[in-house]
Image (cartoon, rainbow, N blue to C red; front, top):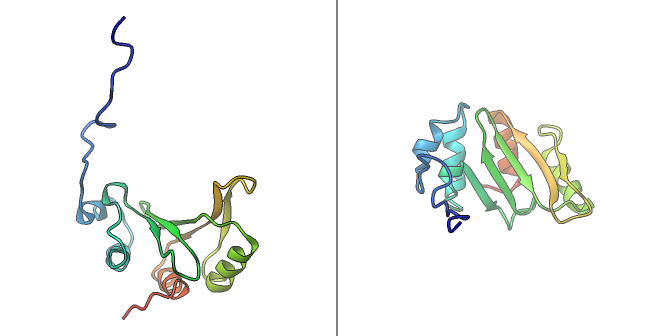
Length: 134
């Protein structure tokens, strides 16, 4: 048998290598999605085919995070699960945004996560990361 391994060049049928945020926004359904994309794109281009901004806000008080555009909300992940990171997140986001931990605190694959479901929560988050928005 010569053909035990067949290389897959494209993971999914019809998967696009490139994509646009305009196309990505058609797949989500919440009022502040376009505004969030516009604000985040001022920092990094992000990954429209994955509907995410990875490694954004590294210099912010909340630290480096990844932001995923889900169908009806934003899902935000941090990778620092220190007590100081938890304290800063809760001071800057509570009570408007509920912060939870994720992963295994014994490995480096852990941190905090929260969802942004309303325009009020988005505004609160932007203030928390020190974003200056008109």
